[in-house]
Length: 275
Image (cartoon, rainbow, N blue to C red):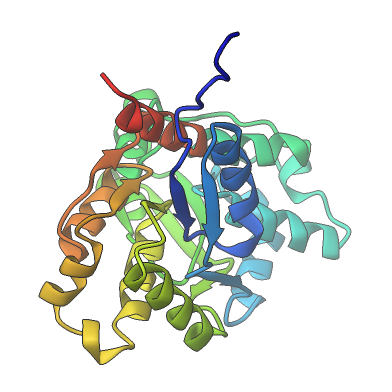
């Protein structure tokens, strides 16, 4: 009688720290390979402080040469504002569209928007290098709808090459409104050793995770925090997130080769599979 197949992540409990609306896809993938999942959204995606800057930029979209989307959240926000005004700015203006990441490109395609440029790797530094190698940047105008936090690598890189970049807040990334509840859940899961793996899909989730843990003075010190996480596999979606994890948590056990949700799962499977 044949033995039942043992899935590569069987027996592993994975903590997903993504926002509520984005956690489902990663959870389904992990469960497919035998993992149990626990969701604790340490980040909350919200509206920008004001819609006016984005609305003004979209109203003058024909003045830009390129619009750059670095996340699915930016796509959702921009498409949502266009829909709200009953306008088809991106399809009729002639502006070219650049996207970082396959998920971002797919989100644009679902909205009927074609991508004109995508970097070979899904990180900001690679975008700047690839884009400047393929296109003349000097004198070109770029619209970069983004979050209220995070790095300015793309804008800085394009400006150095003579580009004119307008960074506009299209959405916000914050600590969850129920942060006390999330903090208590994290402390319970970790102190009771109920988690084998923690996944981080962005630097901001790693930062928020640490902030929420340090609400409890017991883990206010870096040493105590790292001791709490010492037996848990830390998995990061890419090099920027991994760097943040190393700075704040002290270690990264898994760094996705392909900087996507699928890539994160694949690298975690490779890490957990016996040699």
